[in-house]
Length: 331
Ligand SMILES: [Zn+2]
Ligand SMILES: [Zn+2]
Image 1 (cartoon, protein in one colour):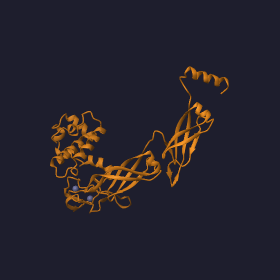
Image 2 (cartoon, rainbow, N blue to C red):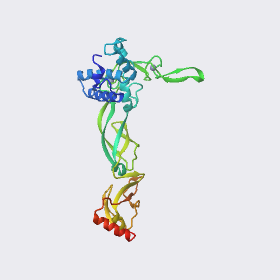
Image 3 (cartoon, rainbow, N blue to C red):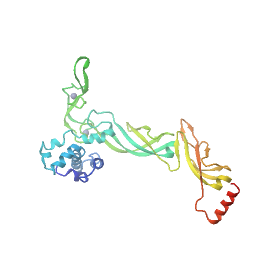
Image 4 (spheres, rainbow, N blue to C red):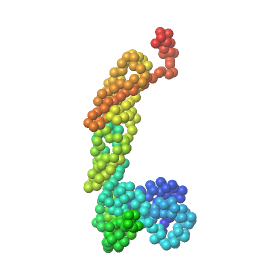
């Protein structure tokens, strides 16, 4: 460590853990060896960023660093670099674990990426496609997915990745600590993928959204041999609200329009339609426009128009006279 971890991550000494995590995430992506093939400087920066986050990302280590006052303090002399790296690339695992489902570190699993998918209201209601991008796990290009060289069967677990403790009926099995559950050890661990054999690359993804999808649903999207899980967040609409397959909206009309009846234009998912407001429509009346709702299980719902009546304020003398007349006639 030859730089202050705060300046490496470009954050202030008072930065919160969220801010530190975000700064780390951004820099780790920017300097990731996959994004900068053959660029030694980027790789060096990538390592610095990892080291800085290894300290600042862990509140306890950060406290110890802060107490040491400045780098070069007792914290770094205590076992030097190895101490800093204690726990390996825990930080990276934390961050990318969510994306890879734990493919980094620990036991390698088939890649599984999770993305947040913002879906426009109308697309969620009627179905369609949404373009997005996702970090897709792929075989590490540096080690070809082997995770490193000098592969040897792990002795404590005999290659099974699990060890038993206790005996007889009470014996339990847990992941082998020596190999992290992989069943083998590597003499030279690949510096790019940290032995997992997998890295990530950002890819464009077109997600087909089925009609009637709800906020919080998870869609499975196959991308190059990997199943991306897209967690749906429906972008709220200022005018429409959805309840199941029905869509609700509010329209406001004037008191004379409600009294005498009128025709107004109302927005639907398919564009504007003319809606008849009958004579004597009461505030709170709900008018149903059939077949303009969301599609669910192949059936399209309706649009329900909630009518609000605007009572005039700030009357002109002439208007006041008219309302006075209405009052006298009992209207
Ligand atoms: Zn590798
Ligand atoms: Zn083992």
